[in-house]
Amino acid sequence: MKLAILVRGGLAAALALGLSRAALAADLEVKIDNFTFGPQQLTVKVGDTVTWTNEDDIPHTVVSIGHYRSQALDTGDKFTFTFKTPGTFQYFCGLHPQMQGTVVVQGTVGDAATQ
Amino acid sequence: MTSHDDDHGADGLSRRKVLECMTWAGTGVLWTVAGGIPTSLGIMGEAQAATTSGMTFLQISDSHVGFDKPANPNALGTLEEAIKKVKALNAKPAFMIHTGDITHLSKEKEFDDAQHIISQAGLDTHYVPGEHDIIDAEPGTLYKQRYGQNAKGSGYYSFDQNGVHFIGLVNVANLKGGGLGSLGADQLAWLADDLKAKTASTPIVVFAHIPLWTVYEKWGWGTEDGAQALALLKKFGSVTVLNGHIHQIVQKVEGNVTFHTARSTAFPQPAPGTAPSPGPMKVPDDKLRGVLGVAEINYKVGTERLAIIDQPLQG
Image (cartoon, rainbow over the protein chains, first blue to last red):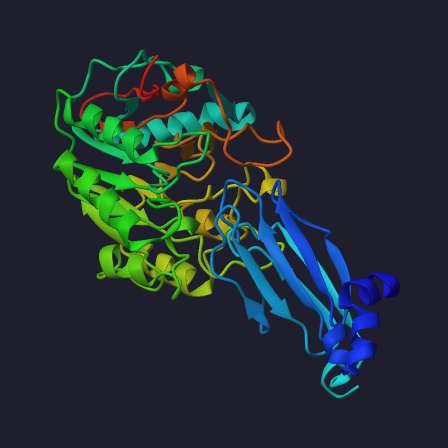
C-alpha cells in the first residue's frame, strides 16, 4: 500500500519540488459491477480520494449516512470523495441497499494539510 | 414464463374463505395481459379471458423510460406498444395503476415522455414510485410534484372504487444499508388508521413497487416491514397485493392474501438466484416482447371464480 501511494503520489517529484505531503494524497478506485462494490473494503490514508465508477447497466448511488451521498450514477458515471478524517466509513447503494462497502481511513486529522 | 408458489398447507380453508368473501362482495378477480394466449394457474382456477364484464383495471409497471441499454434500447417504444394494447382492449378499464419505476433516472424529460405516452391510454392512472423515480437532485421532488400532490408522506394514499378499497404504498424511500424495501413507522400508522373504518368483507387491493413479501432477500426483493402491513390486513377476507420491481411474474397465495408481481414494459430480470446479479437480462430481440407485459385485473360481479391470468405483450 505504502509503495502504491508513493508511486501514485509521485514522491520523487514531490521531494524535488519540496511539496508538502498533501501532494502525495493517493487516488483510489472502487468499481461498481454486478451490483457489487469492488473492492468491498478499501483502506486509505487521510487526504486520499476515492472514485467510484458505475459499470452496471442500472444506476446506483453511494451513500454513507452523515458523510456523503452521491447523485444517481448512470452507466459510466463517477463519484469522487476525499476523506479528510480518519475512521471507518460504511456505505451502501441507496437504490439497492444490499450493496455495501467500507472505507477505512487511517492517519490523524490534519495529516494531509500540515505534514 | 410464469411461476407460482402456492401455500398448499393452508389453501383449502383459506381459499374457501377468499371465495366466500368474493361471493359475498359479488366479485371475482381476473388478471389478464393484453394480447397473447392466457395462462391459467391451478389454484386460481381456469382462465376467464373472455369474461370482461364487471370492474376492470390495469396494472403497468417498471416502464423505465430513459433506459437505452442492450436489454432494450428503446424502453419508451415498448411502453408505447403496451399502451397501444391497452387502447385496443374491447372493454374499457375503469382506471390504471402504475407500480413504479416510471422513469429510469428521475429526469424531467423522462417523466414528460412517460406522461405523454401513458396519457394516450385515456385512463385515470394511479401511481406509486419506484426507487428509480426518486433519484433526482432533491430525492422525490419531481415525482411528488407530478403524482403525489394529494398523497401523504413519500406518496402513499388510498381510494375506493366499486366497493373495492385500493391502497398505494411507498416502500422505496429512505432505505437503510443492508436492508430491504421499507414502509416506515409513519406509513404503517397511517395504514392502520386508513383501515380502521373498513369492514372485514371489503375487498382490499394493495399496490407498491417492491414486493411486500420476501421473494429473494439476497437481491433485496422484499420489504423489511411488509409483514407488519400484512398483519394489519389479516381481518380482511380478500386481500390482493400487486407489486413490480422484479420484472417478472411471481405469484403466491397465503391465507386470504394473493400476491402478484407484474412484468415490466421495459426489460426482463433474471429469476431469483439464476444470475450473478439482478441486472437487466438480455434476451434475443425476437423474444423480448414475450417477457414484457401489462396486467388486466377484473372484479367480476356474480362469479365465484378467482382466476389469475398473465400474458406477454407478444407471443
